[in-house]
Length: 591
Image 1 (cartoon, rainbow, N blue to C red):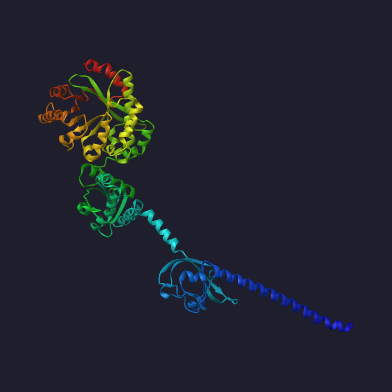
Image 2 (cartoon, helix red, strand yellow):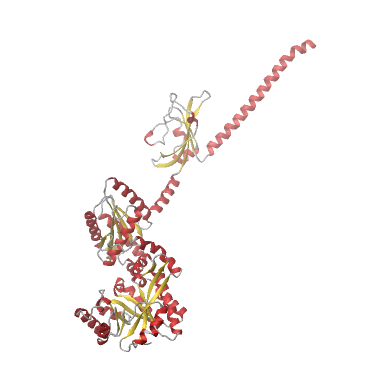
């Protein structure tokens, strides 16, 4: 028995080992099957297209996501060449291809692939080679995501960033980029780049009269109209509001002048908006690089300055030059500091008295703003008023002047001096529909009667937008505020038009008054103006009186009031109090 057992032990041991091997193999096969099932489930349920291609380019795997993304069923593509590559290009791999370590890594790409219906879609593609146990290439795997919507969203966002939403023209950001490129290219050939800034004249009146929706419809027609007058290489942009720009990549002064004329002619033809013919005019500022600017910002700035000059002088278009540039670097720096000067009370007022020529009474003062700059000292208004008008700061500046003048008027009232204080308004002020209400609030807060405030408006400002001027002045006049037309004779309005305005007086411009004692033509203009104005029931004030002789001539012509250096220069309130008590009293002028 013992011998038999010894003989059986090797056999049993062998059987046990074989059973163990079988168990391990079964477990491995079970694990492999489970792994295969898991992999199959992943492939089948993946939202990404998973495609395997054999070395000759035929499809070996095509999961449901691939069917959904590309439209072909697995039955249609398995065993056939990959159909999604435009132009039916085959993947470049095979048994003789030289391989490197990177072959086993995924390579990420963005490509356009073809759907079954022929439409090309944007995709994100990850691809890697597959190798067998001997290291030979057995195929390639592609994992693909459809990113068409993402690309469309990116394109939409990009378009919104660089194009104007209303007109679909390039915006300021894209214009600056194209300008930078054009200036760089032109510099290699010593050529000039031309930039036009175009502003539609009195566009606000169109909005106010016909409605903003019609104004927008008109703006949408500007680009196509300009395109008809330009070459294909020229770039049209909308900078905002009613301001457009045209970039001419290579142009000289003569060509630019010709193009400016073509643009104005193209805009002359009436625009038809909802059956309504609308006629507009435009002011164009022209600047060239490198003569007028060596970078986009300076070129845009100088074209903008030239445009404002063209608008102010009604020349249609103006070429930038240092002569027309009132915006020196110092002025531009001052513009950046002006808002702080308003907020921090770095401004102050001087007052110039007016006397009544019949009674020789002091009837009022004109408030004139000055700027006490910490670096430049006292800055006169002609260095910052125009800049404020063009920058939008004229509104807070005007309200500051009105508020300060009313406060000083109240101080004088407490001292027993009843004076009317005059403040100047600009054309931009008259276009602000909130101005009358804001001035009313300042009057209420000051405790000063409305009749103690006088607002002076230049004749030319009235004619910028007569409809707005009439509305604003009517509202101000109804409050009891005195209204005066300043610099009369330098504009182009008529006394017949002035008769319809709710004004109380006119001020004859000093250019006619200063020389009237020696220039008979000026004296005749002053005499006629006084007579005609009185016939309209208005008062007349002469400014620029610098001699006793002129003062007496004005009195002889029945002029109502006068101001000028002979009477007093503009002075601060402290000096004006001295003037009241000494100079005015000595000359027999009194309150």
